[in-house]
Length: 334
Ligand SMILES: Cc1cc2nc3c(=O)[nH]c(=O)nc-3n(C[C@H](O)[C@H](O)[C@H](O)COP(=O)(O)OP(=O)(O)OC[C@H]3O[C@@H](n4cnc5c(N)ncnc54)[C@H](O)[C@@H]3O)c2cc1C
Image 1 (tube, rainbow, N blue to C red):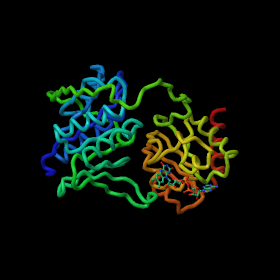
Image 2: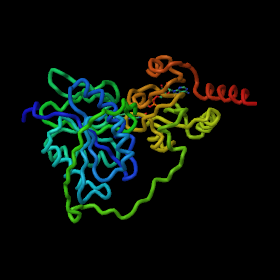
Image 3: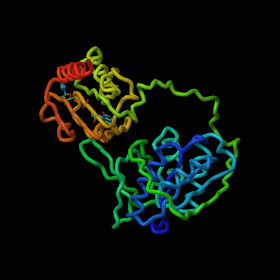
Image 4: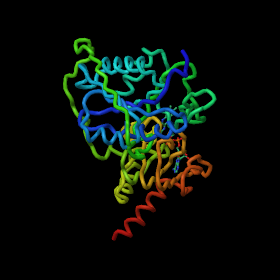
């Protein structure tokens, strides 16, 4: 296998038939930048039907081409047709890299077609770079409990495959190219060969309090919290600020808050205007998920790692500081 035979970067555009999931657009925006370093062209890959106005959104992200796949087997996501389509397409066009959103579906089929192609698949990178000496993409992510940033490459095989969690990269479209290449591929997959069957669809219980990815203000509670009885004051503070509660992983492990509120590398990525953390030590696995305009941290340990990350730090007891903030905010509202 010669690496130089493989060119161009692909992004899978996940969609539900009506609209494109944000992660595919985020990836196109980020990989547009990486293509500037690698010299590759950027292609979006769409399986099944997506309305024209949504395809225009993909174009706005500066792609050089769109590969549109039609045929039988794409009515609803299924791992068999998706794995087959990417295997067939990759063998035909030899892309250098393929990026897939780290969603439930993406994490399901990307490693499978990687195995079929005998290549490597990296998950949850937080940064992407390029080594011109080797021609390899560098997938960078926290490792060993956040103590180091690991640089992962696929040094021998192609394509280099990566799943990236939603919210990792910013949706910042650079604008459409005047001319792009359209490739239409018909890849029929026998519906009888689809091994999983869709028996129905039950939407996730949509408690808006659990949807923190787009919150403008987050009060994040860490392992410094003594017990669930102490949580109420943080809910109150979040309410006064018009924000939402989030947490670090230990609070989910302790069963105090649901995992949907976990912020970080293996949780939700957040981009609030204001982020207030209480009793959070500042492990990179957590802070990697926070991109706040203003980050204020409260911790009793003056040497806590969080203080080298935040904009403003308060050394003190988390409950006392929270109560003081509540008192001052309440006084201002009276
Ligand atoms: C692969 C992997 C993925 C991970 N993904 C995530 C992730 O997505 N999100 C995540 O959060 N973690 C994640 N972790 C775990 C992460 O490494 C840390 O263990 C975790 O973030 C620590 O949470 P914490 O800061 O709340 O707890 P701790 O590290 O225990 O820190 C508690 C802090 O509270 C302070 N404190 C205690 N009492 C008080 C008080 N009364 N007043 C003020 N301060 C007080 C302490 O000084 C300390 O700084 C991951 C780990 C691995 C290995």
